[in-house]
Amino acid sequence: IFKAAIFDLDGVLVDTAKYHYFAWKRLADTLNITFTEEDNERLKGVNRMKCLDIILEIGGVSLGAEVKLELAEKKNNWYREYIHNMDKSGLLAGAEEYIHKLKSQGVLTAIGSASKNAKAILTRTGIIEAFDVIVDGNMVQNAKPDPEVFVKCANLLNITSDKCVVFEDSQAGIAAAKAAGMKTVGIGSEEILCEADFIFTNMLEVELPLF
Ligand code: G16
Ligand code: MG
Image (cartoon, rainbow, N blue to C red; front, side, top):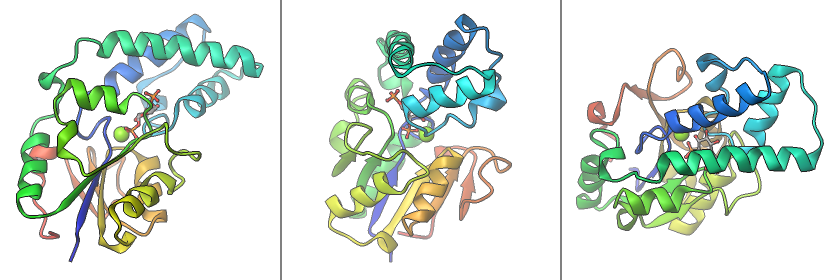
């Protein structure tokens, strides 16, 4: 019944969620804002400027647009340093095997990521060729939980939303996929991803009767 699998990138296929966290934490420290791992859940899947806004809100800090752009760039430079030496070992266990399994069954594959660094990461980890369609943070106006990124994937795949299954590790991403009218698979903890239709601890565990 389902024709396409749309994968979020950070936290589902690659282990970059921790680097985003390290970089934001480092920035929060420079601003004297206490930023915890629990706070970080709110940043997952959310675009760069919105992440900064959430951190500033946590710290009760209000800044002008220009300073905010500088801070976001600072964070991104740190983040890019962290991912610079990434290779295949940065892939999360089971991810590549699962994608190839789906492809061998004729399932279409796409990336639906909020990240502007998505293509660089896909290239470094050697999986960029595995996707029929890639939609990243450079191609959308509205951040998850807005459905735009996933709707765009379906459009480019030339199929309707009800034929798509989305794999996500974030609350914002699950909400976005649901708003797009797609089936959702949460990758991570049940506590955090309880809104998803299916939940698996990691990509190795995924066993779906959907394709
Ligand atoms: C990812 C992360 C988010 C990050 C966003 C933007 O999205 O989950 O935490 O803020 O990308 O990344 P960048 O600063 O590289 O543009 P996803 O959708 O791949 O999980
Ligand atoms: Mg993610």
